[in-house]
Length: 137
Image (cartoon, rainbow, N blue to C red):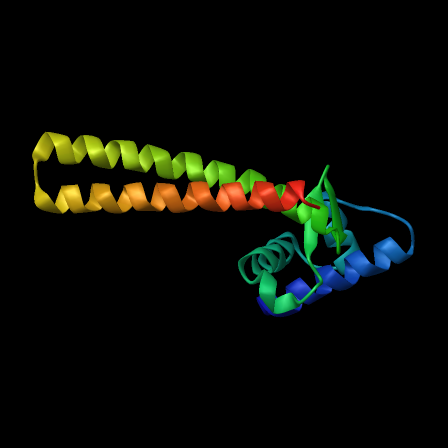
């Protein structure tokens, strides 16, 4: 089964569960609702996260161990949390890159360090924009 088919089955299962007034709890709940294996469910979830724009407004969120479709607030919350984590990781890369450049004096290391500084600035800007967008909702 392709990742797109797995993703579509998850979207359909979430719609059915919500229409029935129930929640899909965790991966095992998705396995039950979709009839897919553990690996297929993860393939579908990966596709939904990696190519979210492909699936239109059918955004699948995961919050408090519950999968839902169309819960944009939960999606934004996840996005903000992930971006904060990514920004922290990028800052660590920048620190190490700068330390290496200072220790070696190598021009390539200095270039890498400057690029890391720019990436940190971009990530910080994205996190700020996400937080602002969330505050304006």
